Structures are given as C-alpha cells and as structure tokens.
Image 1 (cartoon, each protein chain N blue to C red):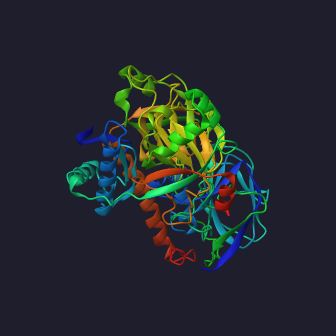
Image 2 (tube, each protein chain N blue to C red; image 1 turned 90 degrees about the horizontal axis):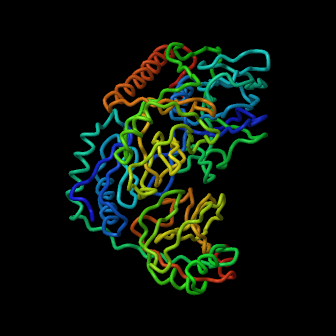
Image 3 (tube, helix red, strand yellow; image 1 turned 90 degrees about the vertical axis):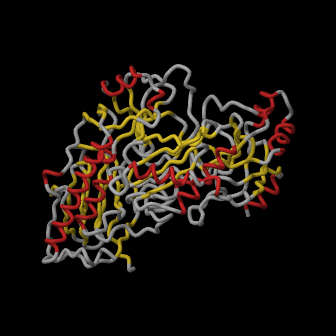
Length: 228
Length: 335
C-alpha cells in the first residue's frame, strides 16, 4: 500500500528521501513517477537533483538556499496533486536477446535450479511485459519486474567482477540489463545487442522509469547483425 | 575557444583523473555525480589560478604524478601534501598560485598528509563536457580525458587565457588551510534508516574508533571496527533508493561503508550521513587512518556549512579586490 502522507527520511543536511509506500509494486511506483513529474515541473531554487526509485524519491538540495521545512512543505503540496496528474501512456520497448551459451552463462544453472528446460526458462522470461521501476546501480541499468513466480531465482552466491555490456540478468522476481561493463550478482541468462546507455545522447539512457519492456529471443546471427 | 597545450604527463602516478565539481541532474538515468572527492580543495585551487571555482582540475591520488609544463602557465596545488617540487630542487608551496615556465617539471616526492591532491591550471582543462560536466566517471568510462585515468604521454589542454606575466603570487590564508590528521572526527546526522538499528548499536557507532581499510576508492570507504547490528526482524537489505556522498551504509557484515560520488542508488541501510561541511575531508581519508563519528543537529550542520561558505566568499572577495590592480586578472577567465 502507499502511505497516506509521504514519509520523510533525512539523509544528511543536503538530501531527503521521500518514501511513498512500503513495497515494490507498480501502483506505488506510478505515484513516484507522478510526484517526480510534479516536482520537476515546479522546481525550487537550489534543487540539485531528483532521483526516483522503486517507492521513493531522493531530493538533493543546496541547504543554504532551501531549508528542509520549506522543502517538505513544497513536496507535501505537490503530493496532494498526485492523483490529478495524468502520466503519458507508457512506451513499450522490445529488447532482443540471445539466450544461453556464452551470452547467458547462467541459463543452464537457472534451468537446473527450477528443474525445467532452458527453453522453458526463455519462454517464462519472454511471456511477461515488464514495468521499469527505476534506473540505477550503473548508468542506464533498468530494474524491471515482476518475473513469473516459477522463475524466482536467488542471486549468485559470489558476484561476478565483470559482466559484459548488454547482459540480461534475473534475481528474485526482478530482471535487468547491464548497460555498461560492471560487477554484478544477478544470474545472467542472455545478452542484448541494444545500446542501453550512451553518455553523448540526450537522454543518455534508452529506458526510463515507467516504460514497459518485452524481451524477444534472437539468434547469434541476429545479434551480430544488430551490433553492426 | 582557443586551446593551448599546458601540461604533458610524464608519469600518472597511482591514479590521476580529470574532475570538476560533479555531474548533477542525471541521477534518474543512473548517472552518479562523480567529481573531485575533496571539493573544497578543488574550489580553492581554481580560485587561486583565476578559474571559475567549479572548473576541472587534476585529482591526484597518493603518489607518483610527474608533469612537464609545455606553455607558461599558472598552477596551484591544494589538498593532500605529497611534497611537490619544481624541477627537483625547489619545493612548491601548496595552496598558492605559481607562474611556471615552459620546461618546468612538477613532481610529487612523498606522502606527507592526506590522500588526494588537486592540481589546478589557469584556463582549466579542455575536455568536452559530458552531461554538463568534465568529471571522469571511472566505473563507466566516460567524461574527463576519454573516460579513463591519465597515462604517460597524455597532453593536457587548457583554454587560452592571458597568462600572468609578473609571477604575482596568491595564497589561501594559512589559518584556513585544513589540517589533515590521521585521526579523523567526522560530524554526522543520524538517518535515513537509523531507526532500524538498535540504540546500543547507534551508541557503539558514535563511541568507537573505526579503521580505514585498504578497500577505499572513489566509490566508497570501507571501515573496520565494532559491528553495527540492525534490529531483529529487519531484512538483509532495503528496497533500493537513491544515495549521496557521505551516506554511511551498513552491509550484512556490520562494517560501515562511507559512500562516495560514484554511487547513485543502493539497497543497504544507512545509519547516518556525514554533514556537507565535512564531505571534503572524505577525500583525504586513507587506509590506516582512524575515524570517529560525532553526532550533530541539522542546525549545527548548517552553521558549519555556512562557516565554510563564508570563508570561501571572503577569500574570493579579497582576491577580486586585490586583483583589480594586478595582472592576475580573473575577469578574462570567467567567461
């Protein structure tokens, strides 16, 4: 459930966590998106950044320009209008993925863990359309959910130190894509040829919170073709 | 703007990168702020050489940087004292602007205090701004000089400004130069998840001495010491949320990690956050140092920050006043 009023958590003297609910669900996340739109549309002088997440928004500010009382008052005022705002229809983005083999080194382990075939893992991963809850961890990394219950999988016990860009991972009921080479602990079941982050593009990330994502299986040849 | 070659990197040392005040406004794309860890030293360095205070500098970590001056220029070194020399025979006074001549060599001879030094160059560092900032995002490899640490043979370009001909020396007031000890006290405010730690653990947190472990880099500073325990029933992690520099997270092993500017979101509980006035000090903590945390109120944190900003303003105003009658003109670099 979403809270009746935002729960404020002070993170030092220059940032505030605005928590809107107690769990990961699309309804709370849409409230986060709506409040983000409102805050961005009516900014206060001295605002440094607004970082929406699953169920909260981090507001970074210049404390000598805005005091925390004025900040909360501003956010409270905007939160009251959350139901009035109409978010644009979410965009649905198709993400091509090569599953298994060297592209998805954990596909085999995941199928054994669930005692199903690798093909069934792929089918389960591609059957849902996923909600992008937030971008975080590394530039452009989308946290998406929910995976079908049958695909709920623990993280790797020992995280990898280097995961190639484009890798598609799963962890618990979440799925995500590693846009840049980074360490990571999710089970890697495939790889997408799409470029999810380009620092010189505006916006730099392919996906944003609120988008919907569908995965479609491709083969190695398609992958190479995409990469060209 | 016309660019000039100012420095050649003869040796990059342990880790030297291009950093400015940071990249803000792109958190929603998962882009961390990066930037100089010690922003106080960055700002002072820039003001000393006549740059805008948010301009990019070279951030030098611990040891080894050696550079040759290609074109006469004004530089200043602030932050950690790595015993800088000009041409192997002349100690280079820190927190002071120096006119250097073509062919001069700047080297760092050893580690006297602190962890990160800031080398500011008049005219700044000419690299393209990526998402409005020149800072190097090392984990993801963009910004700064091709998104990577400096290497031997790199040439640093600066924007062309009229160099100071008289060798007019500007210094930061001695009394205001921060003292870097090896035993730090950092002022903190509890939160954002302090209620999820027991009162006993919060007490342990502010009464204990923690050691800076070797696992300290631009992403975070891992501490070792008495274990901080979450309250019974609290899960292993929290739902991921945005984080900032200075937030102190407690992972499963109970050992605090102070988050720095290369992290944008996280799923660990944060017991407390270092106040803005002390954030610059985080850039000077190094493995082997010790840390104590001191709880302050929000008002005390603001007063401490106001004090820092007042000094910065007085320093700047004084400089502008002097400069009106000297050749170290700031106006032509504040474009």
